[in-house]
Image (cartoon, rainbow, N blue to C red; front, side, top):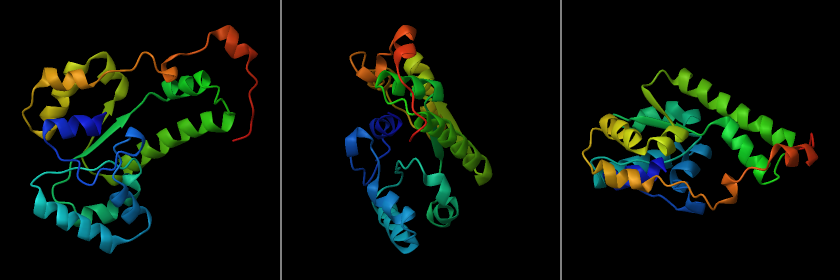
Length: 185
């Protein structure tokens, strides 16, 4: 959602591969996660030549902050979190309730927070749930940070939770009590 909003606001999400609608930049991910600093530098240089401003999405980027800061010019780090309880509830809804996966949700959340704090870089953290509940305010906050003008109302319409998604339907407490939980995973 955040990557889509940035693209619509005028920030090209260059190199984005729409892998399962996640808007992830597989070239950036591969260059950083493989430790290919030379390739990352080449990607950044090429994108800087083509765009005055551009962005990429990589959820684990904070792990490579030292490399990124060598090559990115005036970066703005934007992080959006889904409420870990909501993520856990989604796993219940899809019957994907392995205890290890629920624990992993909170572990990933904490690793991300700690990684952000360790970077000592200006980071803007957003709540996905706030975006869904107050899309117009969310969009205005985003535009203020990236210092771009865009049609707030049009961008706010992009934030549309899918009520028909099975990910949004949670089982009743009675159904939860009948589910068998596993320590595996």
